[in-house]
Length: 387
Image (cartoon, rainbow, N blue to C red; front, top):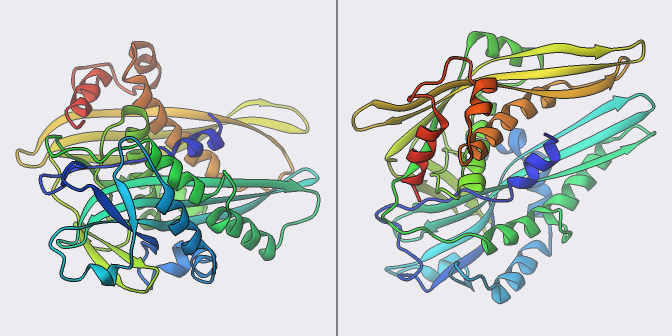
């Protein structure tokens, strides 16, 4: 599957509710606070090196977001009220919504006589309770930009692309994706069981493989958790508690608002915990000529769901998926995006195939024989309880 299609789908979302999460009926409106940043100050240079200064120095983003919020209407989402958070002091009941930027990724490749620039930005539509500082909903979203030309790209080109995606008003940008996401979701009620990707692990082989591309497992784990959560919600319309995106502590996340105020937001204990174990990667040659080669990039991963109160394993399956790519033999490639495409393609497949007759998919992609514990029907039944 083309990575553009995969990331386009991430404009879907991930949301969750808890017993303290007041339904839309209880809150007739939500206060909109503009943009925010999820990384801590010491993480910004690594996760939002270009995006943070571009957004912070943008004179029109917050006013544009506020103007759209004032006229925003959606059938299942509360009315938005534009307000500075300082004005909410003393209130005993208020939900806050922010467009929270999470991370960016930019890279350049050479394909024959052409250079290709790729930019990805991840963000969240973040809803939290202003009084209790508890996260109510998190809707992951992502946007991507690609460009190709004969001239080599420079730093100014990367900055221009990120500016277009982060603060631009085009349909492909993060602001437009943010509003499209909110138009298609609802704050779920308190009866749903809750789900959260709590841990991402890497085998020794996977860790060694990441080292070849200078990819840090510590930095990659939150991205994997967010991507899996987004695909669960996009394909199953199931709420998912957020991974601790901006804080080291496993039960909190940090959000720095546009005015500089930092909120440490609590993430409630889930009813179901999801473990992702990246078991390894592999590349095989499918076809080769004197000029080009077709490679299949394979990813192997285990997804496991447990009930934390009993420590009972409810679902556990080791799976594999390949992504094919044809390249010129003299191309200057960063192969890591191809391996990651295979991994998130696996997430996309497993969350979409479970609603169909999945036996054929299971025969091809399950590493071991099908059992009740690794059946996608079992996974589907668990996720249905989280609606």
